Amino acid sequence: MPDKPALTLLSFDFGEKRIGIAFGQTLTSSVTPLHTLSAVKQQPDWAGIEALIKEWQPDLLIVGLPLHMDGSEQTLTQRCKRFGNQLKGRYNLPVEWVDERLTSHEAESMLRQRGKNHSNKKDVDKIAAGLILQSWLEQQTT
Image (cartoon, rainbow, N blue to C red; front, top):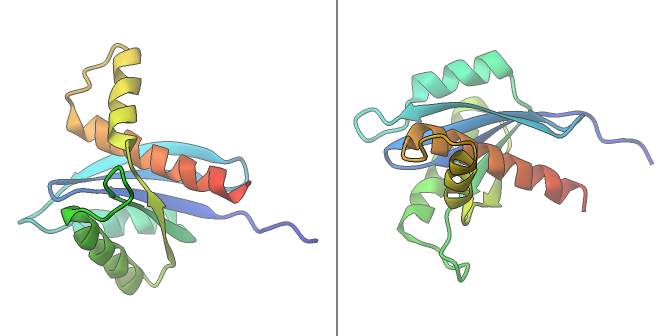
C-alpha cells in the first residue's frame, strides 16, 4: 500500500473577534502556532488570511468546529461553518472540520504552566489553533 503524500496544513480557531492560526505538516506531524488575526469590521481579516495562505501554501485547511459539551451546535457553529465554506470558495482549498471543544481551556492551561499570562487572548487563540491541528493529525494515525 503506498504512503500518503506529505501535506502542509493551516488550521483556524475561528472567533468573532479573533482567529488563531497554526501551521503544520503531515510528514513529521509537527505543529507551530503562527498568528492571531483580529476581525476587521466584524469580518475575518481576509487580507491577513490570504497573506498566510500565500506564504505557507497549504494543501489542506483545518477549521475548529465549536460545539457544546454534549456535541450539539452552539450559536457560533453556523458562523464557523460559513467561515470554512468561505475559505474553501476563496482559496480553492479543501477544508476539514475538527471538534474544538476545550481547546481554548487547554491553551490557557498550557500558558499557565509556562508561567505566561493566559489572559492574552491572542496567544490563547493561536495555541488553540495548534491544538485543533494536533487533534486532526492524531485522527489520521488511528
